[in-house]
Length: 315
Image 1 (cartoon, rainbow, N blue to C red):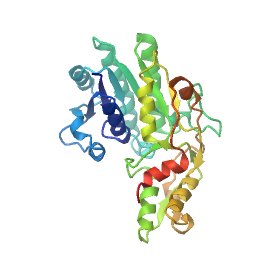
Image 2 (cartoon, rainbow, N blue to C red):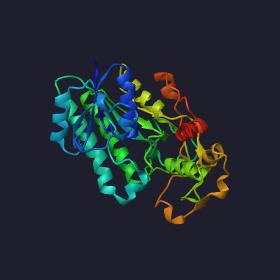
Image 3 (cartoon, helix red, strand yellow):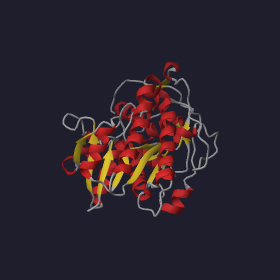
Image 4 (tube, rainbow, N blue to C red):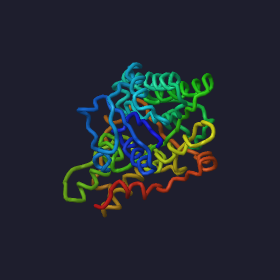
């Protein structure tokens, strides 16, 4: 039986990845800073909580990481942990950068010291590319980070590349573009939009307040993206991959579609507030996932409207 360790198992991607691996017959362990008192609502929601072994681990503490990996002896490690909000990273830059860079370094070093080969997946981010100006980013597009979150993810990316080259580790980074699901936390703008639209459709008199809506992103479906993570660790050699739908649309289109699917006109229910604008933002983020399609055989199953419909669910 193949054993996997998912660092950050409580999040959206950790929960869906747990589901995927359990369905493939894996033994799955997950980490949390507090295994006893942590909230695992996403695992509960998917009916997986009792099937995943939860271990306490602090990614920034090397001894904690080393002892966790030594205890569960994984064949595969998926490092998904860290402060995941771009907006929050402007308020907590030190915590954000430390959570990714030290966490990634400790995982790499601990795996290097084990007496068995361990395949590692590290969660990268499209934010590393910055504004692509409408030019689809590939695996060789230079990074131009515009937030503390993106700087942290870029640093982690180069750590992975360095350990792969210097020590011959099977370690790779998935450069994932935005991916959504009903498990998205409410602090993310996509979930904020969908939940507000559902409440308004149910009779709430509220207005949805947003910052910039002229930004454009490539939004995909989270369950698709965890499959890509798994596929990366099944290849003969480790490589980095851009994971995205290949289709970019604006946040205004996201809002319009969400309200339209619920029989509403968004103009009647949405207002903009400049106070919600970020100190620096990316106008356009677009992707070319052709390498993943060619080498992994992976293609996104959900695009634009299907992603939003999936988030709305059976309203």
